[in-house]
Structure formats: structure tokens, C-alpha cells
Amino acid sequence: MLLTEDEAKTKTCPQATTYEEFSYCNASGCMAWRWQSVDIVDDAFQAAQLKRMKEANEVHKVAFKYVSEHRDEFGLPMIPTKGWCGLAGRPDETPRVLR
Image 1 (cartoon, one colour):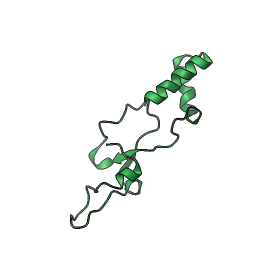
Image 2 (cartoon, one colour):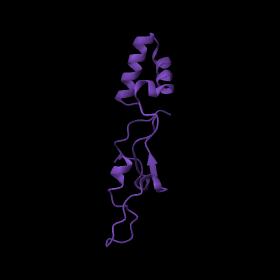
Image 3 (cartoon, helix red, strand yellow):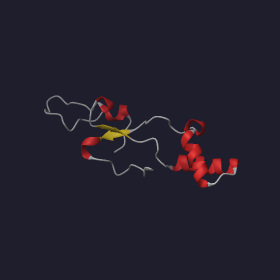
Image 4 (cartoon, one colour):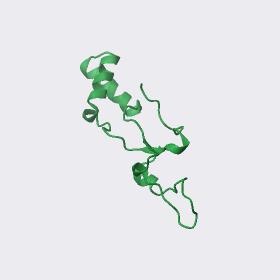
């Protein structure tokens, strides 16, 4: 499950050793925390790419590179905003990542 840091901090840590006093997630303060990549190709990225292709009359590959390098110009996140507990592996909801 992808969560913001604030959302994660409301969840019980799976490494908690006692149930008398819940230990909550430390999010990015934990070695197991993993950030979702900002290189995600989601609907917003694809919309920005199509916009660039139309406005600049560019081919897919050129528009993709431009949007990737100028994310802030299109209102796309520059830094990760969501992550997950890495103890259980990648969440199923994670969109595909370009490699």
C-alpha cells in the first residue's frame, strides 16, 4: 500500500515487539522505508507528454525526454511523495516504472 509519510506514521510497525505499547511506523526514518520513484509513467505524465507533443510538434521519444527533464513545468512531482514499508516487498498498486 502506497502511503504518504503522515499516513504511514498512523500504522503499527510490523517489527513492534510488544502489543502493550504500539510502535508506530517511522516512515522515512526507518531503514525499511522505500520511496515511490518519481519516474513513474502515470496518467498525469502521459497527459503532459501528449500536451508537449501537440504544442511543440515533437515525436513521442523527444516529448518523453523533455517532460522527464522538466517535470516542474508540467506540475509533476520533483521529489517522491509516497512510499511503503519495504519489509513486505513492493506493493501491487505501484504503477509501472521505466528502467
